[in-house]
Image (cartoon, rainbow, N blue to C red; front, side, top):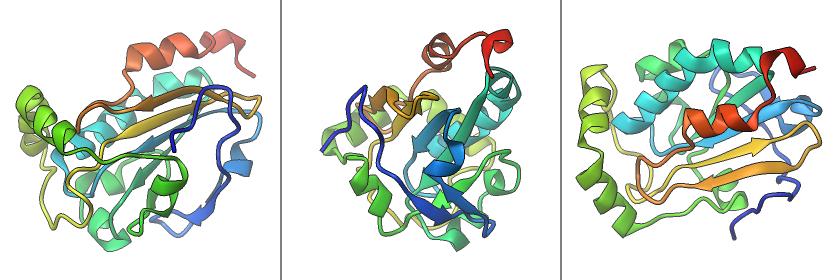
Length: 183
């Protein structure tokens, strides 16, 4: 079941791939992006984490924190180049427990459409060294992003229409307060 704007997101308390505890409560009163991606070896998902990492200094100036979720084992995520450079927590969820709690969907059509329309992203992901290793999650998983406001409510619930459809940086930056206004 999809979560909606204005709802309070489902709480969680899990360990990230580095063994650090990550909980929704720890981000209370802050802007938070929860980014649900596909399996560890997905080249577009590796590219997304890489892109979030590059944009993180600018987003952090606006008061944003990020937690990324990957539906693979910790070991397979740690085998990816992005796992060692991301400036935010990455959570392994191979049983898709949180994916189910947040209503993250699968779609055969979305997989096909993403493969057809996002070839440049796919190529760029492979070029950067992403996309190696076992596919240990549903290939038909669609990404999803949830922007949570300091009041604890979902400000944006973006459910990907295809396998590469994530919340754009423009939409994210428009939703955040200017850097001088965050607390």
